[in-house]
Length: 166
Image (cartoon, rainbow, N blue to C red; front, side):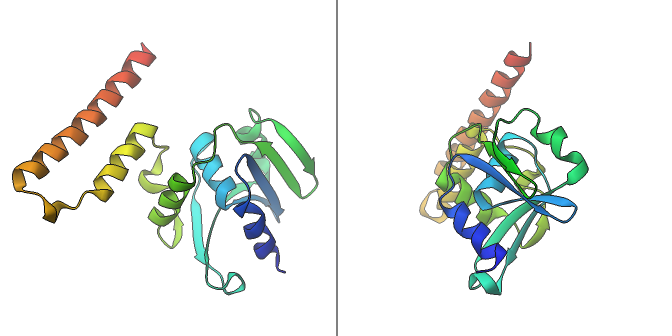
């Protein structure tokens, strides 16, 4: 079994940890760990590639330069560590549907996470509703009303954020 295969297999059962693996000058987080890191710590350039050793499956990962690691992980609780491997507690519960949507939205190759920022739960819900709305099954007036409701939800969310900052 290749290293990538073992990382991929381990991540399929990972729901509550951020696992980092040493790879030269970088620490890599794969699959669920990359999702947790991007949602909870910092949005990094995310790589999405298909590998023959994984039977063509897509693998997503992020890389953190070894000199930057403590900058991003100082607030995380270390579960275990050794010279080639760190395990941190995830800050939030794993959401399999959100992970699959995130992974699907990432373009092949190298990219920032969709939108380049961490999305709020409300933003993700608005995107989910928009993605599932079949516009050809509705009248123009119904579609306009639907878009208006999404816009209202986004505006309310922004107002909540401003109120929290005050």
